[in-house]
Amino acid sequence: MAIATAGLSLADPPAATSPASTRDMSTARPPSPRQWQTGLEEVRAQLELIANSKTGTPFAPPAEVDRFLYLYNALGPKDKEVVVADIATAYAAPRPKSLPQGRPSSPETIAAFFSPYSGVRYEKVWYSMSIADGAIGALVDIRGVASKLQRHSPPSDVSLRNLTDSLRRHLVPIFNSSALHFQPITWDSPARILERVMHHEAVHPMKGWDDVKQRVGGFGDGRIVLGFFHEGMKDDVVAFVEIGFFEEVRGDVTAIINDPAPVLPTHPSTAIFYSITSPHPGLTGIDMGHMLIKRCVPYLFSNYRITTFCTLSPIPGFRAWFEARVKAGEVSGDGVEQGWRLTQAQLDRLLGSEGWIEDAQLVEEVRLPVTRWCARYLVNERKGAHGQAIDPVANFHLRNGSCLHRINWMGNVTSRGLRESLGIMVNYNYLVPYLEPNHLQYLKEGVITVTDHMSSVLTDLGVAVGGDNAKVRVVESQ
Image (tube, rainbow, N blue to C red; front, side, top):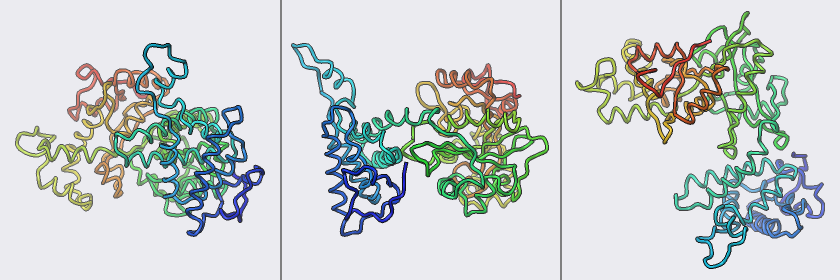
């Protein structure tokens, strides 16, 4: 929890003997260039004090942790990367290569052999920070920085992977469902929260305050934003979902976003989850979206009597996959089955620029074959031993227990939508009675559940379901 202490600088850091003076971890002024190296050196020195402190407990003195937080949060992005790389290497203890032979091994030695975390000194840093005011955000930030560094490091370098795994183990219980506060985000919410929502939204960016007001229901009660908050990150939102209310399932996200005055229908029955955002890279792998949807469903039923819960989701991997099929010669040519085939001229227009969507004749000509390829991508293209969907968004919703419900041609004709999926979007239906069995069957056997509506569409598209495809099962829509 951050409490303002404006005016401090690294030249005059908070005294280690006065923890109460160190509580503002978010508004500290960054060091001037003259102080930059000194800041790094002080952070390293403070880490040593925490890691080597001997208090008789897993925790370092609170004053030392407060001082480290102040110094770390005052660093710029590049210097944070230096510090996190230092933590990953200098504060790690390598696992023994083998157990000693000829004599019994101690429990500590056995634990060190089987765990990559046992004995690492940064574990004490995490434990100490987990109970300090203002530290939760710093832990999330450190893991986010480590994840970024890991993406650009060679696979043989396991130090950063061990650090991110270690931090995940610490953050999972901190961000469990019972510790997260669930509430609507409205136009009456604090400006700092609305600003964070605007800043974090990346799927359908908000260009200004009018966009924010429309999304949170300020121009009409047909829209709502629901969010998760954590006591340790009071000035930020941990995850949020943007929702529209309708009388039927919708498939055009542009119409939802651009509606200037979205009113609540007379008889709303359907909630469309058109954007789900978990904005902090340091929380990757901690399933905020899954927990948020599970909290949204009973809330929407109780407050709005909503009975249909559908997403309107992007398909970020489809276009790249489709282009690979084109390069392999599977989409054009005399050998391609009718109904799946596109001419080279059509492909040149389709993949050459975004202008093709202005040609109504071309849009209609390519609609059926491109939709067929998309259905195949979503249903039949799998990865891993259990056959999970290769599209990351599809995998997320299917893991949650949802059903594939509808493919929407021209559902998102923005530049991003055309770049990712040739404008196609998909509805995943969260049918409450089927959530748990769908979740288990997908994880254990790779079975994708589709609604009866989607089943008939897939059959018309020539994609096998049911008995002809044991990896796809059909349930009745409600």
